Amino acid sequence: MIHPDRVRSLNHERSINGPVVYWMSRDQRVRHNWALLFAEQLSRKNSQPLFAVFNLVPSYPEASLRHYDFMLKGLMLVEKKLQALNIPFVILAGNPESELPRFIAKSKAGAIITDFSPLKIAKARKKKVLENTSVLFYEVDTHNIVPCFTASNKLEFSARTIRPKINSRLGTFLSSFPELTPQPAENRTDFKPVDWKRLYNTLRVNSDVEPVSWIDPGEEAAGKALKEFIDGKLNSYAKLWNDPNAHAVSALSPYLHFGQISAQHVAFEVRRSSAEQASKDAFLEELIVRRELAENYCHYNEHYDSLSGIRPWAKETLDRHRNDKRDYLYSPDDLEKASTHDPLWNAAQSELKNRAKMHGYLRMYWAKKILEWTPEPESAFDIALHLNDKYSLDGRDPNGFTGVAWSIGGVHDRPWPERPVFGKIRYMNYNGCVRKFNTDKYIRSQKNPGS
Ligand SMILES: Cc1cc2nc3c(=O)[nH]c(=O)nc-3n(C[C@H](O)[C@H](O)[C@H](O)COP(=O)(O)OP(=O)(O)OC[C@H]3O[C@@H](n4cnc5c(N)ncnc54)[C@H](O)[C@@H]3O)c2cc1C
Image (cartoon, rainbow, N blue to C red; front, side, top):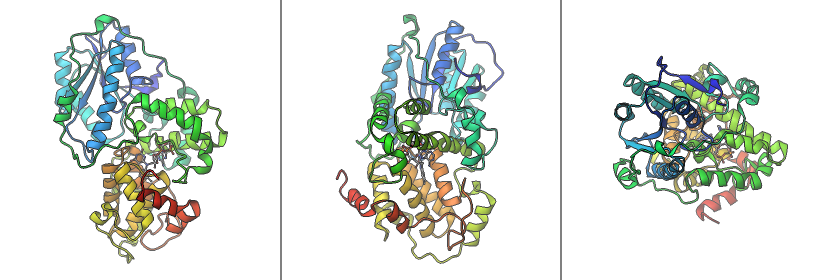
């Protein structure tokens, strides 16, 4: 049922003498979740109770109230769904390094199952928890369709090199999901319901970046958004994906980022839909190949969050053009306030700040202009990543690190004809956008949101 290549044992423990704990971290959903299914299977096989635990850290780099609110509201629904399955849900507040081992000891748990993340912060936490517990510990990649550590064992060069590796395994991994079986009533121990108000009070985050109302959090809302996309916009995806005025994209990235929807479920439903094949192919290329290429980049390159991670040709060319004259120079503050000479860039930045999103095509333009208008490539990288992660609901994701590295550092791209400032990094300009879509319409839409 659960493919063994999706699961990695993180220590040498083999026996289970106590409850099975599913440590939900990145994949915050109940349905279509291989890690929870694996935990349930293990608990049943060993006749042990099953609990789910989430460890809420009071702050996270760049995360604001906007992100935490979306996440916590999604987790409230997780609690309800787990309750209906007789699975207690516990939220620990504090550092997982100490909280989880304490919980494991207190509940006399016999095994921990957690999900997979390629990011350093998650890997470091997992390592610490592992050092502080001696129970069976498994990691299950339930975020990717082809598990990241199975798709490839090395840093991939580009989409061209990872595509055949992923596509050749889709027959094995791109299946539907079994449903979870409700646990026996006695699995419901005396765990108290989560005190959400208290948890909100533990947060130490920037509340100036406010929640947004255009998107409802949680796995039900995610499923609804997927259905609406498949029934409506998917058919025109191939033709219109790069037109920000067309709203032809799925807007699923916040749900995917918080694991409120499974990429595998999305791909499965898109594949079996009756939309035109070219659109299905174009969408699945982004959802599967590009997204899983980003996971590969972060998993196998520990410098994914800076320009140190880019390839030698790109470092060399950016260095050679380091002292080129910039026609415009902006401070981080000018950029954050969307006060540049370029109305298109300002509109994109305003959408990011006010609506917590930016269309994929504009994201490339936006990041490349930051390279063009700042004194050196290193600060351009840092500013782009900071603004993306601070404001975008889907920020702090492997896709974001890789998107910035692609735009500014040529990652997964090839050298292009040389020009000032960019060197051989691919260039984008305003006129290119004008050729692709009605830029005036987009600019107007950000001056009068909702129009
Ligand atoms: C500078 C820059 C920053 C970015 N930051 C983020 C980020 O913080 N979080 C994030 O999820 N994506 C990021 N992306 C990738 C991409 O722009 C978004 O995933 C996409 O715009 C999300 O909108 P959507 O869900 O409507 O996408 P759709 O077009 O509907 O695509 C469906 C899904 O495919 C995946 N996808 C689409 N485009 C890409 C891509 N280029 N690379 C990898 N996966 C892709 C996403 O998971 C997306 O949700 C960034 C790209 C750039 C150039």
